[in-house]
Amino acid sequence: MKTSAAVSAANLLLKSVEAVLPKQKKNLAIVEFKKTKVALKRRSKSHEEDIDLPSLPQDILIHIFSFLDVSSLLSSSQVSRSWNQATCEDSLWRLQYDIHFNHKALIRIQSGVSWREAFKNAYIGDNSSKDLRSGRGYCCYCDSVVWHENLRCPNKQCRLKSDNEPLELMSTRQVANFLLGTMSSSDDESDPDDEASRGLWAFTLY
Image 1 (cartoon, one colour):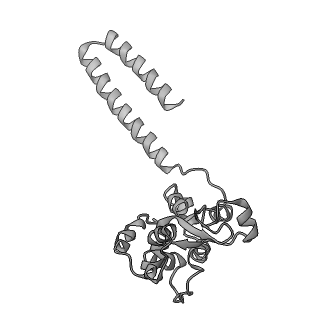
Image 2 (image 1 turned 45 degrees about the vertical axis):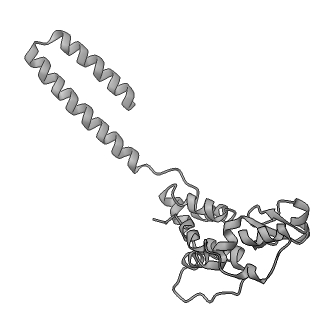
Image 3 (image 1 turned 90 degrees about the vertical axis):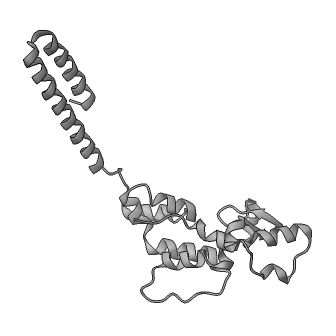
């Protein structure tokens, strides 16, 4: 019998008890009923906590997660234990690292350091955090600044011509200078808002 049906039946029984039994026995029955109801709710809650979401095999989850962007990947890690375990797969973070930072000098990864940690450190670094924050990049095929879709030009023809290569990402200052026609070497100078970008890495894995 389902919990809701059991509680309804017990409530009907309690009303019958209140109408038929003497006051002393009625009070005793009410006390026992309340104890039983509390115990039933506790068992039901405990059972629900033990139930995990139905999950696909880990290798399939990892394959699916390889198509997600960073934000979606981090959000997925909060869904369930099995999803969290899948998002910890080092190959996913190696892929994210290659996608976001392949246009920069490769950083030597010390042995024993996970690719997730390497990505996180690069993400909160000054230059990389500026690039990721603007959400825009330069497409040489469009010859324009575009809002990127997963680091690619939203124009399908451009993606085909570029063999789906990532865009050259731009900081907010570089975008403004491009639109104003004032691109210069000063664009490489540090941005006073860089420190604020460190708060972008808000998710943590279990």
